[in-house]
Length: 151
Length: 480
Image (cartoon, rainbow over all chains, first blue to last red; front, side, top):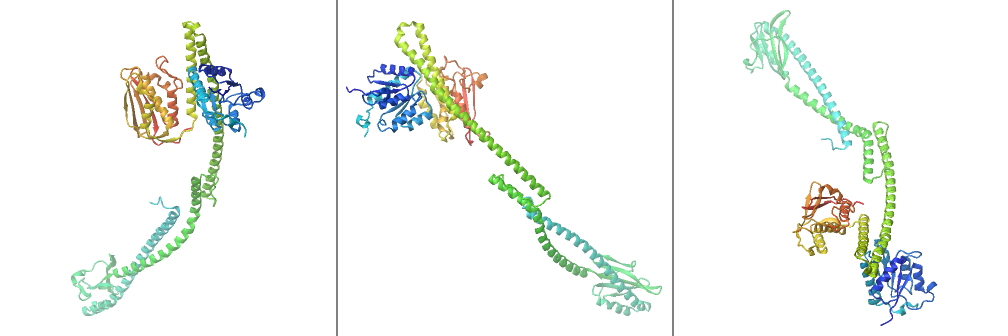
């Protein structure tokens, strides 16, 4: 079996992080999950800088992105990823509490691949997270790694 | 008759009519005077003629010579208007007459009283024939004024008509000039009023053409315009202010609901999430009561999640922009029933659905109205033996609206609480009997109200309920 690419989870709320990790564990995912607690950390991870300067390994198979985060919020991370030639191919799934139409619209306009509202019901939450992970980390064929390197 | 004639023509007509009346009256007076003068002249003429004849016939009468008398009378041929003449002797017997061929029977048999009198167009009468103080006989004259009168009348009328035509012509020219003095300021006012009502431009002012009552009217009119302009500006300013306030409040509301949507849901998710994790990890260590507590925590968190979702959808329903289009309600209701899986319950529902008219509405919103009402009907009739749901319509020409209703034979409600039905989170049934958050009917009312319609309900506990909503036949401009 090929070594699965990591998943980047950008989420500031530790409770949500714990629940999402529990859900992934529940679904038996083997992918490495990196957690960024704000937008800045997420970008540092992607660019291998700051705390992640020594990071090796490929870019994530998918970014699970919360919209409301301190310092750099989800929209800005998304905008940055989509305008950066190295990162623009990475699938981005907005994973948020908001169901606001403005958020939906803005996210898709910025180039989000999917928009998932975190259900309040934990069973549904687990279902949603495991389906997400299954689709983006297992089923979906990510762009070849070579396309991520600068030309 | 004159009501719809332009004021210019009205004034001209007025002036000319006055002229004609004055002229007719004057001409009438003049006519009367001329007629009286004519009679006087004729009478004098006939008296003179009589005097001459009388003095000429004294000899003939004195000497009883009728031939002479006839000859004298024959001289009357020169006076063609004398119809008849006669001489009577001193005893009152007919002595001679004129013309010769006249039958004596047509003449008075004996002399009457002296003097000439008018009888219609005739002037007749007797006068004495005397020598000195002695009366020798009587002269009778019958004068026909008819031809003379008609000649005079013809000339007179011709002249009168001619003069009248000339005077009317002059009067028309004068009236055209005079009426302008009155009509011009009025027309100017009317023109200004029309321009304002057509263009809604209150900066226009009427031109003042004099200091009479019309000038006063123009001044008042302009003053009124100034006030309207000021009021209008004030109103516009206030509308702009209120709009800005409303927009600010709306922004705040949006921010609020965003915050509710995002921030209130997260802790609930955590409550349920960690309750579940606890259950999974240490569920076996808990006794039955502890298990029940955990389940209750989870259920309460999920219920609050639903409430928040409903509240958000209710708030969205009041803010989203309406997109009215023609809606096929038959298809809409069929789709709602199909998509709601209402026929998959334990009991078979008897549906009675009348054809519904097409309406102009926001399709998605109207769908929610039907979904809520039909969903309620199914829900609240879920416990009866033979659930029946009736969907129908009545069109009220009086109130210019379509009325729709959904009737069920379910749990019904007490009419005392009907005002609470459409309130947010108001419920007439306990959560243990029928689940729900109590937002559905509030949404129905909000949507129907935004479409310019009404909502109401009838019911009786245990005997079912009927929920009505109306939509205007001619939809007004959508409410904000």
